[in-house]
Amino acid sequence: MNLIAESISIISNPLVVSLPASFSLVFKTSNNIYYSLLWTLISAFFVGIVGAFVIYGIKIGMFSDFDISKRTQRQPFFVFAAVVTVAYLFLVLLLNGPKVLFVSLGALFLGIMLDSFITRKIKASVHLAVYSAFAMIMAIFYGGIFWLCLLFIPVVAWSRIKLKRHVLQETVIGTILGISLVMLLYLVLKYIYA
Image 1: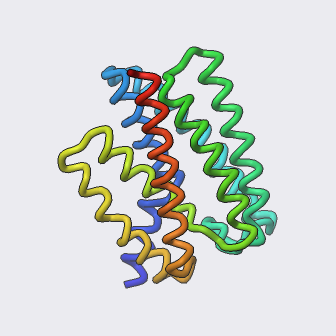
Image 2: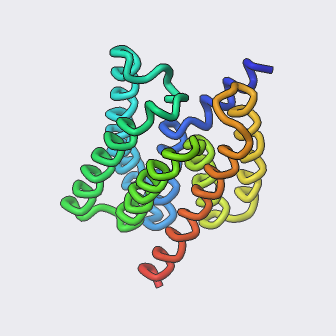
Image 3: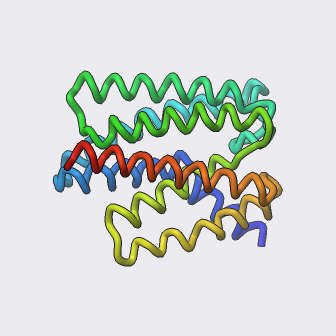
């Protein structure tokens, strides 16, 4: 069961999930596969920077594992992720990139700030926040069978609990955070594209 939980945890890792989310958002608003792939590649560059920081953090002992499981170790990660997000925001603005990415990165920045604040009291699951956000994006923007993505949320929660990375309360808080940010994102985008 641990191998299944670990596989689910890898698939739902925020760095992994962020790339199809980026593609899905840009494609839905542009309907241009090449434009969407270009911005997904740019997203991959920034995601790679964050991933490299985590790997470096493990190497020097700043983080105990790739999940940054210890609550006390998360603040440096949040600061770094926020800086990278702001840099990406400025690049999107500078290159007159997709508005949907600009708004999404703003929501991501807000999510990082909220999770940083929440983490002072409890270790909210970033896996669940990001996966829940992705599932809601797919369900709202694409509909139909993509509503089934929401059924995977409890599976991701189970994997995080099974691996002893989180307790139930932490997965619930992460899920609520992710869904709330997508609802905010949806309202902003509905206003922009109305």
